[in-house]
Amino acid sequence: MRNWIIFIAILGAVTVILGAIGAHTLRNTLSDVQLNSFATGVRYQMWHIFAIAGCVLLSKQFNVNLNASLWLFAIGTLFFSGSIFMLSTIPVHGVEGVKAIGLATPIGGLILVAAWLSVAVQFIRKK
Image 1 (cartoon, rainbow, N blue to C red):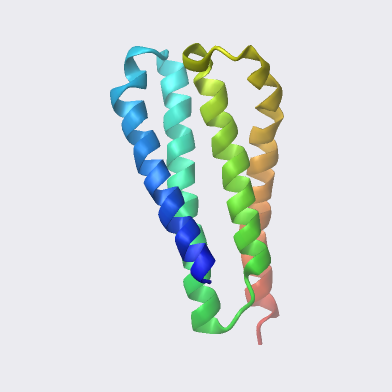
Image 2 (image 1 turned 90 degrees about the vertical axis):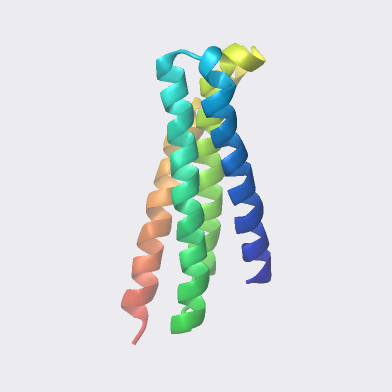
């Protein structure tokens, strides 16, 4: 679980930095739609950091194996938010080829849904 705490801390720091960049730097470069998309990526990333932290705590408290859920949350968050960050900042980095990663957003969303459901399944199985 130590590695998950480190992951949470680093991802949390990155999320705060991205939020600050969005609020103070990108607002002069991106359209309102792009800036809103970027903010959505930050918001989902922050919420799922809390989900990962919650899984770490719940797994200890209730002696439930939530490793699959943790990995699904981590991968889903990186796919979902990461692809939104890349797509919404095309005017900044100018790499048009990143549009191909647009599929990562819904895939990441589905992985996040699977993560939430896997937590439920683990607790349903727990006697």
